[in-house]
Amino acid sequence: MRTILPVFAVLLAGAGLAQAPTYELIGSVSQVMIRIIYPTSDALFYIERAPPKTEVEWNAIRNQALTLAESGNLLMLPGRAPDQGNWIKDTKMMMAAARAAYKAALAKDMAGILAQSDALTESCVACHRQYRPDYGKK
Ligand code: HEC
Image (cartoon, rainbow, N blue to C red; front, top):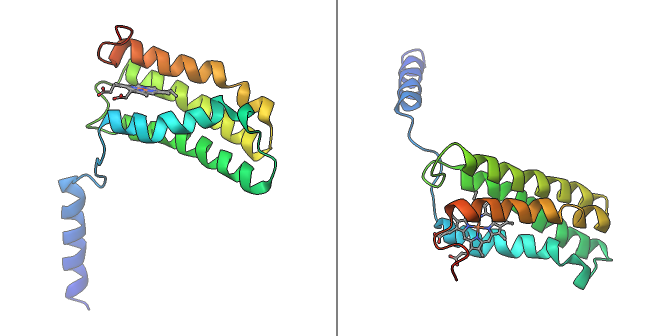
């Protein structure tokens, strides 16, 4: 043990210095939008179409809200974020609204979720206006 431990310490320090990314990008930004952000935000925007009543239904909404909030972290990963300016600002706007919606969902507060709709929409539009190719031209 006495000889092995220092070797381990050196190996660990070396691994730290190499800074190999510990994450892997799987989907494109477009796929993250279509598969994660679009369906989860829709579940919040249109919650009134099928208002949750049971614990199971509320948990489904909580899942959507937390997934949406955390998806902001996916957008900010190096390799996805094109800059550290408005991209991050717009993402954080989305995360703040989704986080507040998640808190409301924990409290089974549908009005509280709907109260975030405008801020949520604003975050989508602000980012799309600047970064989405051909935005508004379709
Ligand atoms: C930080 C920036 C950012 C935010 C915030 C954002 N988007 Fe996007 N979104 C993009 C970009 C960039 C594209 C274009 C992706 C491409 O075509 O490669 C896009 C594309 C999309 C698309 C079309 C995907 C396709 O390829 O057809 C949908 C749907 C979409 N976003 C939904 C949303 C919704 C809903 C929200 C808000 C809840 C949102 N986005 C918030 C950056 C953002």
